[in-house]
Length: 637
Image 1: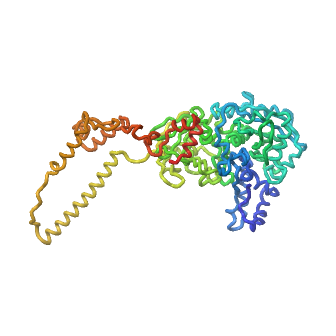
Image 2 (image 1 turned 90 degrees about the vertical axis):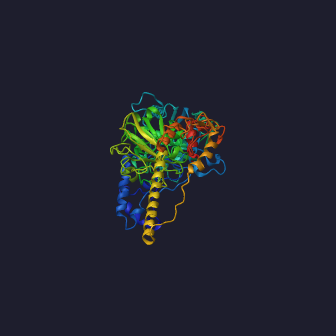
Image 3 (image 1 turned 180 degrees about the vertical axis):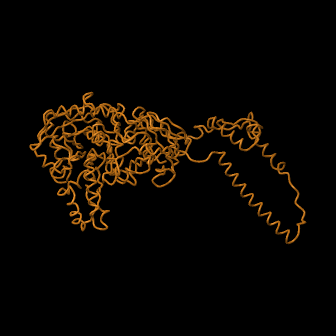
């Protein structure tokens, strides 16, 4: 639950400060909304106008706070299993000992839904607030129509952002009059408080009213015994726009207990108001169907991913009628895009993700693990028409983190090209300086840039995105995941160091001779005879090696000899050491590895330490792109 971060002795002082704001008299509603947490609920981000009011009130409270108390005025989240997550079944349905984080990620980690996904929409009205005429048809169009609404329906939105993977189908039932009033269910706490009745009770009452006329059986899309998408549309406005405790804030939550109907069960639900826009519907279904967490900062201390993602402020793009696409991380986890895991340095063509359905995964040596970067090209068209800018978006992901409430280390962070960190400071919900190259004309992202590609622990990841082209439907950039010097550069550096040491040694010997000659005269001792070491040591070793030569090359198990004459293995044409090294590099690059899989089965997945073979992971996951990507994230690099 959201509240001021305070202890009991400060409560009266904060109450006096709060009474000076425009939210005076509505303390619990302002701080007890869904923007912070608690009790298994996930809420849509506040509308832009309401967000400005919240920020203004917090600013006023901090300014009026006594000395030493200003920093205590914030919105605090009490983390609980089910809040801001994909909890969609009762805990009793999960194996004994299931970790809380696994329960919270249940919807996200189950096998992704695909094809026809059935959604049931139930309209709920009240004795003190009823729907206007035509409500059922409006929501039939909003959820399931094609070509009817100029900005698109829920069906059309998910068809577009999933590249046809998801086809939303279903029915609208009602309206049904609830046994309690809207004022009762809202309870002065926007329906999300702990007192009863609240929105959870409204969802159960709506299921009871609809059960005689609705067959809930077909709405269990994955056969787990639970309805996957139960939507309650209530009469009246949403508190995410009005800020009123007398209205219900749109959210995803769970009922107090499962509701049995038609051989299946209802437990998780989402609720939206009668004036809901496409963005609110899509955002809440993101929670309910796909387990996406809120990616805006739920304690309101930053903007999280801002307007760049459906699960952030992007649900309100275009006034809520043209919500942004889900971010690369959301799409990758559901298999809606192909994730190309970069394992070698090189220049890549990067088309708009909306047409290519491809994102790039970057980490040191292409290794597996929970922390990594994702790169996608986002252009302002289609449902992305109202993005703050366009170009390459570089996402920093840490799967070990569950939410975006800590701006210093969130789960999903956007690396903002202009280096101002407007999202992290809460200055804005995104601007033209965020994508690369953006308004800052930043064409390099590496360990020394601002922002940089270091891990959250501060270590060099060897990741770089350089030579980034101008924003276009198809962009290009050099993607790097490997650091280290070339063979020739290593040799040159070592030889240079050796020469310095040798020169210093010679200088010391020369100085010592001068001192000795000055003190004792010239040394008359006979010099030791010179020994021709080439005769003494070269011949035997050479003779032993030539018996393994075959046609001028070494006979190795599995093949792969370099060939050439006896002059260093490449003939007498390569006189200098550097020339020989260059020839070796060229030759090695042109031949197949001489260690066959049969000789080293442990190297069959990869020739590089830490690199994952995505095709093998695909095989392990039965061809499921989302499961393969999850395997890569959870493997230890």
